[in-house]
Picture 1 (cartoon, rainbow, N blue to C red):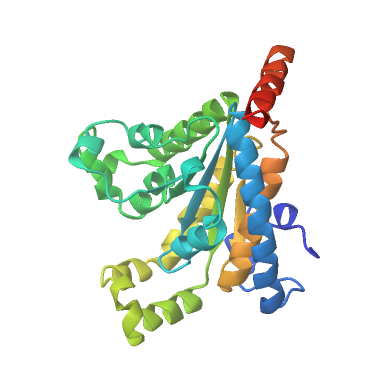
Picture 2 (picture 1 turned 180 degrees about the vertical axis):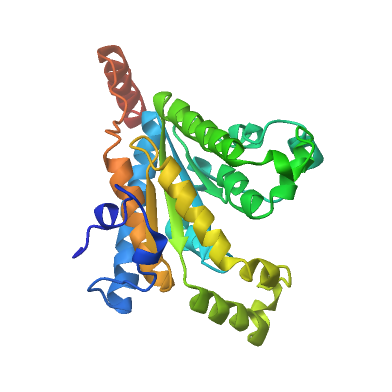
Length: 289
């Protein structure tokens, strides 16, 4: 590839959302990008098989974005070729009453990938410092606080600290974490929402509830910027991918995921001399039938 997306989109220093492009697509044409994605999917399938065979580590991919940024289609196009037995997608909606009766990280622990697996969070624990920061009254459903006045700067710092500690704990216990923010522009979001209205086969994707949230777009961007700056760490890095071109976002994401898996030093299990002898005996038995 002509670009190193893992390096280009990794948040290393202070992140400013206003200084990054949503339209960038490198020197690759759409046709080249689509063809590259096909090739990369085969590589991802092989690495996922190796992760499964290794059985000592897991990969957690966290996807965050505004409505219509392309999370669902990215999951489909990037992970469509992997063995479904080794991959699990969890989409986090509004918490249930049972989930609200626990701490905000509880339901995310339950969805973590076991060793040998890839887990994908379509939205995640970050909703607690994104939508719940834009709408602080949502936190009252946890029944721990009495008033929105309780949600001061210290409250949010405690949330970021909890997330950092959660992710550090996972990383120390065999889970590699990749966090991807699909950075779509407000104009492109408008176009995609209109497409959902104008194209009958996409009508089912449109929700009138998206519009009030769109009106808070700038506020959400501030929350994303803060959350990314507070939680992009070596053990759980954030990648901010330009998402106005869906094909480019998918290609960037798959390269980042492949690079991450390659750095995990995955190994196929080695057979003992006794097991190898058993294979030889089994081969002879089968060939003699």
